[in-house]
Amino acid sequence: MSDSFDVQEYLADGVEYILKDAIKTSLKNPKEILYIRKFAKSARNATKTRQHHAENGQNIPAFLIASVTSSCNLHCTGCYSRANSSCSDDAPQNQLTDTEWEDIFIQAKELGISFIVLAGGEPLLREDIIKKASNHPEILFPIFTNGTMMDKSYLKLFDKNRNLVPVISIEGDENVTDSRRGEGVYEKVIDSMQTMKQKNIIFGASVTFTRANLSSIGEEAFISQLYDLGCRVLFFIEYVPVNKDTLHIAPRDDEREKLTEKIEHLRDKYSDMLFLSFPGDEKQSGGCLAAGRGFFHINSHGGAEPCPASPYSDINVRNTSLLEALNSKLFKSLREGGLLIDEHEGGCVLFDRQSEVERLLEK
Image (tube, rainbow, N blue to C red; front, side, top):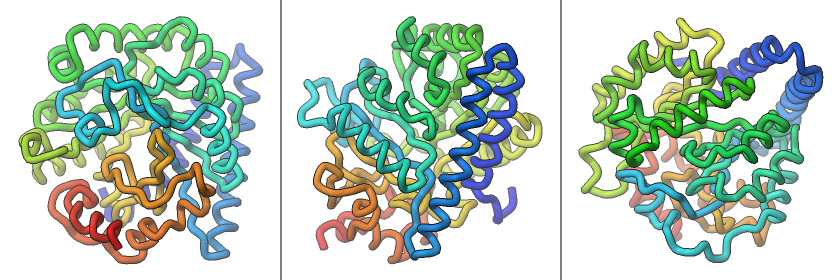
């Protein structure tokens, strides 16, 4: 892969390929074709809006990550959300309401943000918010879910509202997936994928890349299985250690390089499937895209954070606008101070430079 790889350009081109494929599989559904074409037009208009902001000195990212709940029905091994207390079994306290989230969606649309990732915890526990998201077809909402709560109600919602795109977590084969996520999870995930394929619902998958599953997640058999099931987007998310006890799970540099080579091969072979690697693609694109360079994160309480793996915030969207959050002192310090593009050990620069981020926050 060349050093000039642009992850945001690749995403834009890839989405266009997926939309074209969706049109081919939806010829019997004129309403769906109409939506797809409208979204493509909305995405182009959003790009123009961001370019207009850029001309006036304001960078607006195309992506927002929204963690809509701190609750989850699983206890995955090494979960950083539970480790940093952004996810727990306690009853949620002081979380943003569905109305507050919809206001964020509206602001995002006005700024030119085209993609809002719904995450958690387990986002399917907040059906009220997902229904609010369905009201905004100009935005594509990838929903990162563990895939165990895909009931008839959700399938009907996803079938009706094609701007809601499930992205299901899977760790590789059954043994690897169940060992990290719990017994029986793999079977539920595959069943959800098969059902969505039958209904022609576009969906993606997400793999947490660790030392334990490198040998299987890039293999042709695993990829072709997902492809045959109807998966058209595959995210490789590098595991970020939550403390010294989980360092042994995180990939080494040579393992990251192996995955990069595999992804390059997969992109050549599957032209109608998106393959994304974080933070690997960020490094190829000139540094970390967090803190508003390419995306930013809002936690379930409204705190604007650089990214989910860097849970630090000096501003809350309950008290301010999205635009003001993007210009928070912490975000500006990270973007302008050079930390996001510095050379560093390992994959995630914000984890590697955690103490520096904390010092910026204190200032």
